[in-house]
Structure formats: structure tokens, C-alpha cells
Image (cartoon, rainbow, N blue to C red; front, top):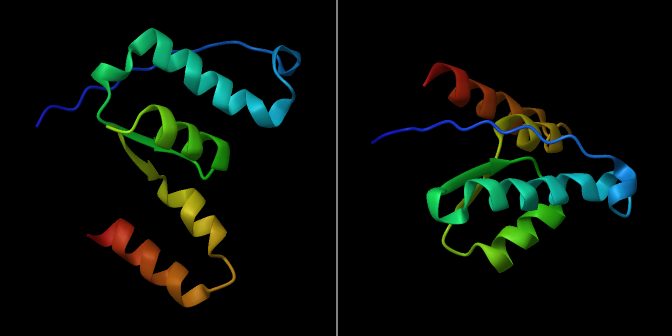
Amino acid sequence: MVFVYNYHCFLKQSNEVDGAYHCELEGLKRSMDVIGAEHVSVLVTDRHRGIAKWIRDNLPDILHYYDVWHVAKGMMSNNIVLKVLFTFTFYV
């Protein structure tokens, strides 16, 4: 298996879209235009619901995962799950 990491930086302002919340989605759309969806098989993002819906609707062949930090942050109220998650992440 070959891993290729591609980093592309865009500078955009929140007044280009409806607000700061929509900047993440717009950044993903612009990145997919540059990289091309045919070159991406797995995408890891934070837990942004708009991004998850856009990927589900527009990129059905791409596997979408949430990053561990944001998942753990969402489970802060349940310390047992959080301890298991961090133990599995760092010691496996």
C-alpha cells in the first residue's frame, strides 16, 4: 500500500462565503477541484456535519473518517470511553 500525502494551502476570507462556519466546506470543495476526486480514496476530517453531508452526496466512492481528536473531544462526558479510545490509539 502506498501513502501519498498532498498538502495544498488556500487563503480565503469568511466574506467569500456565508460566514466562518462555511469556510471549511468551501475549502474542501476548492481542494477537490485542485487535487481531483479520482486521486482520493480516503478522507479524514473533523466532525463538521456539512462536510460529511457533502462527501456523502458528491463523493460516494471516497471513505470518510473522523479524526480521533475530534471524536474524543465529543465524548468528553464519558470518561471510560475516552480512556479506552486513547489507550487503543497510543498503545496499539
